[in-house]
Amino acid sequence: MDKLQDLPHVWRACLELALEGYNAGSLGIAAVITDKANRIIAWGRNQLSDNLDSCSSIRMSSVAHAEINALHNLPQAYQGNRELTLYTTVEPCPMCLGAVAMSRVRSIKVGCADPHAGATNLLTQNDYLRRKRIAVSFEGGAVEKLCFVLHYVSIKGRLGHNPHHPILVKIKKRYPHYVHTIDAYVESSSIFSPGRLTYDSLHSVLARMS
Image: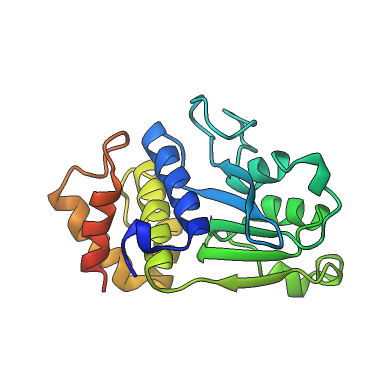
């Protein structure tokens, strides 16, 4: 199950938004919130560096993270609902995890881990967060790979392709095979230039990551 149309509708929505974000010049990270029936009721994407008219209400700000925007866009009628699930392409950072805890969302589905800024470990290490009983699960397979590609090329582009940067070193330690495959592809192709990346391009990289 490696084509976009074959993925669960929730992850399709996340990946389409993440791709939009990357091509607009922000990080390729997106999130959606679903209700008990798995219907998407709120959308958000990283919009740190672009002012494109998208689903995100918070733009061009250091707090314009995907999860923050999704939570901010949650309809008032769902504000007190504790049966909501947040899907995010990348493991939430401390700020976003805190925002989830302050909401009524009690389930998080993560596309790929973030060994640098990911903070889900705080859910067991912090007494306040532990009492929130927020369940977290990490995806695997095509979803994880696609989410990782978008996240990695976003970070790599911002850090000037310096393989010795501490953040990239952490990512490579967590996902060595994925990093090696993507780096080789980046060196031989210009498809990762912001504004030019398509899902077909992602699919071609995914085929090499198996």
